[in-house]
Image (tube, rainbow, N blue to C red; front, side, top):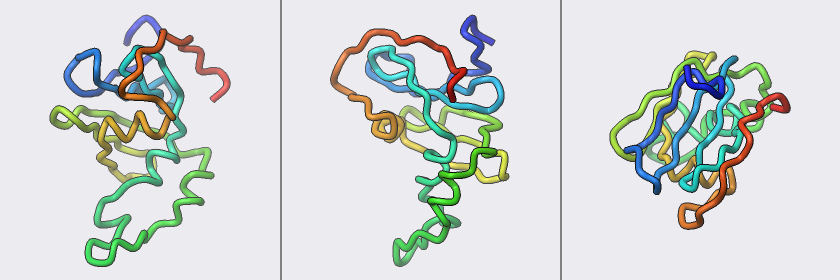
Length: 128
């Protein structure tokens, strides 16, 4: 456990230009942007973007899950986060699903930029 209360950190190579996903106590998540800023991200937002064969029809591209219901589920929590290669993380969810997400998608989900350096933000997570 690190000094800011995070249970683990996962991301790409520990390069300045990569984003990482941080598992917080209680199964909440935050993204560390390339410049170092920490931004909370709702578990449902990441889970709803899953593109696996269970969630999206491989032949038609039709979304097979109720993304809005997943986004609205305030009980959904991350149970584990692992680095997968250099550009993705895998999240195991409290609903039993597992999502693979590219680190660049994490930046997009939080409205961050992969090109702009930003200062470090507070790691206060009381409001999410």
